[in-house]
Image (cartoon, rainbow, N blue to C red; front, side):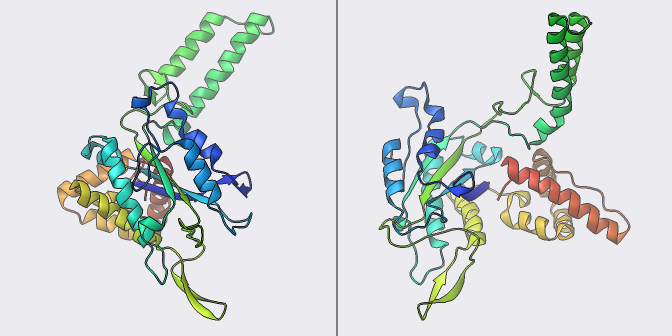
Length: 339
C-alpha cells in the first residue's frame, strides 16, 4: 500500500482553486459513456459532479492565508497483490476509501476527537498509471533511447543531404537497440508516459484544509506532530499522527478484506528499513522460510536488492544502509511498495 499526503501547489505557491486538479482527474473519463465513467464520491454520496467538487472545496477556505494550503491530495495506491485480493473491484476500493477516511479523521490530535463527518472531502478512482522519468524501467532504457534518438536524427540528416550514410543500415541499428533494451511492453520499449501493465487502480482524495463547517483548520502537514502549544493563554492540542494513520490504513484493509499482509508490505518494516537497515536485514532473516521467500519476492518486484552481508561491520552498515535505502526510495516513488 502506497499512501501519499501532499498539499497541492501551483509553481512555488499553493493553488487557489482545485479546478486544475479536478480537470486532471477527469482525464480517464474522456470518450467514455456515462455508465462506464468513474465519478467523484464522498462518505455518503456517489456520482458527484466535478463542478460541485470545485465549488465546495474552493468555498471552504475561510481565513486561510495565501501561504497556506487550501486543500490536500491523498493518493492511495494498493499493490498488485492487494488489488488481486479484492479482484480489482471499484466497489471494494470505494468501501475501503470510506473506512480509510475514518482513520484519517481520528489521526488528528485535538481536544475533541475529529470524526469523518467533520471532513470536507471528495474521492475518485482511477484505473491507469503511466511510467515516470525516475522509475527503474525508464532509467535503464534511457541509454538505448538516447542512441536511438541520435540515429533517428542521423537518418533525417541523410535524407536532407547533410550527412553521408546508409539509412537502411541506420534503421537496422535502431531495430537492434530496441530489441536489446531491457524493459518492454508487448515488444515496445518502456518510455516516459507509457501505460503500465496489470491492475493499476488507485484512489485520489481531495480533502479541504478546513472542516466541513469552514471553521477549524485540519492540516495533516508534518510541520507539527502531535503536541500541545500555548495559544492566547490557553494550552491547545495540535498535529497529526502520521504513523498512526499509515498503520491503521493497513489494518483497515487487512480486516476488511481478510488480507494476510507479509512482513515486507508493512509500514513498520519500511520504517525500520529507512531508520535501521541492519535491523531490517536481521528481521528479514528471522522470518519463517515461506514468509521470507515471499518477502524477498515482493522486495525484488519493487526494484530492491538485498545484498550479502560483508564480514567487516563497517562495510555491513554502509553497504546495507545505502543499497537498501536507495531501493526503498525508488519503491516508494514508484508506488509499488509504499507507506
